[in-house]
Amino acid sequence: MNLEGETLRDIVVSVVSVGLFIAAMLVVGTQFDSGGLTEQGALAVVAVMLGFILLMTAVGLWLANQH
Image (cartoon, rainbow, N blue to C red; front, side):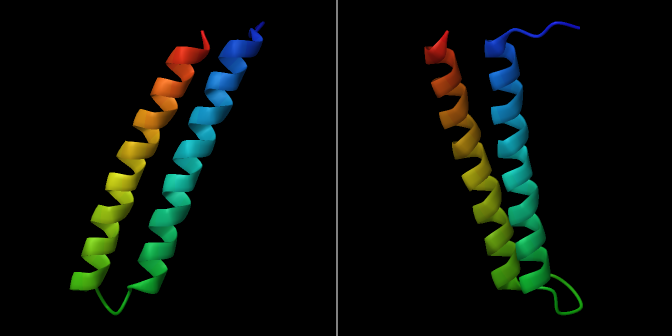
């Protein structure tokens, strides 16, 4: 399968963004684990999700302007 440079760049940027989200969720999960998710941990999870949404929005806008 031949992938164009732009397509490969899109894939790499998207996979790295999702990897950052997964890593952030793992950090939150290990930092706030005390037999269950604490109130602070729940807020951290929401913050990570919001950050991911904003990151993917920024990445999407950046990628759209690259073509």
